[in-house]
Length: 319
Ligand code: AMP
Ligand code: FES
Ligand code: ZN
Ligand code: ZN
Image (cartoon, rainbow, N blue to C red; front, side, top):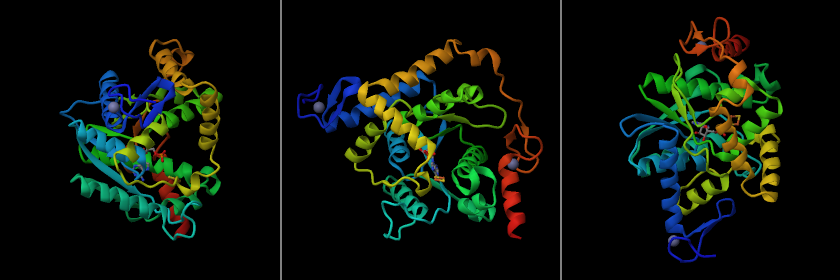
């Protein structure tokens, strides 16, 4: 297979796009496409300050690299979750997941001369994610729900406190298609209404963007590897056996039988939503938000926000 642009030997073959490219042209193609998506969905401009949430994984580190390469003003945010177990892949290596992902995020920032904010949840709130999960009813002791809540809360808090215009995450097409699949299976219309490449700023919530949402996971792996980014290979140890992994595997089977199915599933959803074809546009109104009396962030729950309630409850239990 030859590169479409230069006829040299292709390194990456994308069946779903009927496109094969050599290393050099692939490393140009991904940022070019990203720039197109940023413009198409009006994510941000070169004048705006971007905060990239980096986990030490291939997607978010590649996103940071791409934005900087394209000339955007982007700083990083790493959240220390305090997950000190190792994954099954690295079991026995003694390397804790959070420690390793922090090391790789910091290494990337140093090597590229970029600014990385680090927030440690345990230092900030007295409890790490696994500790918070132990004392929470969310997810029956499995930390993922607590972790998701804490990450959303902290990303928004830091973005707003430090005056960033927009918060960018590394979600790729596989992530977005899996979420969409789950929400469609249960027709979770409120969630469907909020899913998309851009979530506009609303009272107290920073604008959120996902510039990589149209790239397949394997395209991002190829990008990170070919551009020499050192990232953490392992998934979070708690992700094993999760519903989102099951949905991803199911969609991968579909994709194998019908190349492009995942992209079509996601893009047609975006089109239908935009044109107002979905029933959700007509019937669902987003709940009204008010400021949490403790942290000031917007919430739809009465009184304190879910995050503040969770932290308070956890601290009462351990006092
Ligand atoms: P995940 O929820 O782990 O699939 O991650 C989705 C996106 O959330 C990543 O691409 C990052 O942008 C962001 N993210 C995940 N974990 C962290 C973390 N510990 N610190 C900062 N951002 C994170
Ligand atoms: Fe948060 Fe796994 S529980 S990343
Ligand atoms: Zn080429
Ligand atoms: Zn709060």
